[in-house]
Amino acid sequence: MKKVLVVEDDPNISDLLCLHLRDLECEVEVAFDGQEGYEKSTESIYDLIVLDLMLPKLDGLEVCRKIRAREDHSPIMMLTAKSEEIDKILGLEIGADDYLTKPFSVREFLARVKAIFRRTQMFESARKTQGTPEVLSYGELEIDLTKRKVMLGENRIELTPKEFDLLALMATHPGRSYSREELLNLIWGYEFSGYEHTVNAHVNRLRSKIESEEKKPRFVLTTWGIGYRFNDEL
Image 1: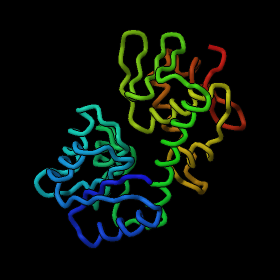
Image 2: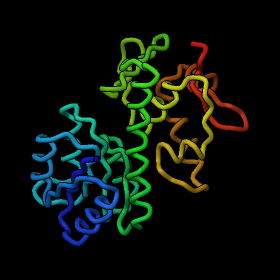
Image 3: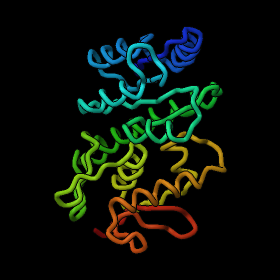
Image 4: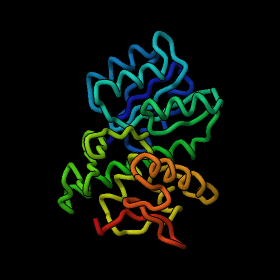
């Protein structure tokens, strides 16, 4: 059973989220302000934290920042009535795994939740069944799957959660080619076409951070006509 914390000050929305999360057989706890939400996050380990942006006492961005500052890597999905791009970018850059703008459909919310759970399970299964180590080393590139930490030589590379998930997924299965549709489904939970540009944009940003020459990548390669793969010859 997955354990989920919902931090949302609107009781109607929190009740709706709890109802559908429990339909997924999740154990759900609720907090109605940011301070209470942060305190609960320190008292237990959650498989997912659903975090509203506009909260009393402590806003969602600050809660997210404080959670990540203590090296807690519980998946965080941010909810907000704001649609401005700057809020979305800021939320993702400080460590949110996903971002959903109100009003949202229950179908999309559940798809995103399932994608987060599936991704977490995928990495756990890879470590157990394939004997994947906690730290992957490919030349000067080191990927710590537990701490979600990436080092390139002596430099720590700051990746957004989605960038890290893309890298970790491909690096734990080097040589396997993933289509853009597969990556959308596994990383974002979008089970429909039309968002392939999202994958391309994230891969480009990832390459800009870990590749010395973006036009001649060493780590994340393009499989022409299919999608992307991690270099299995390193």
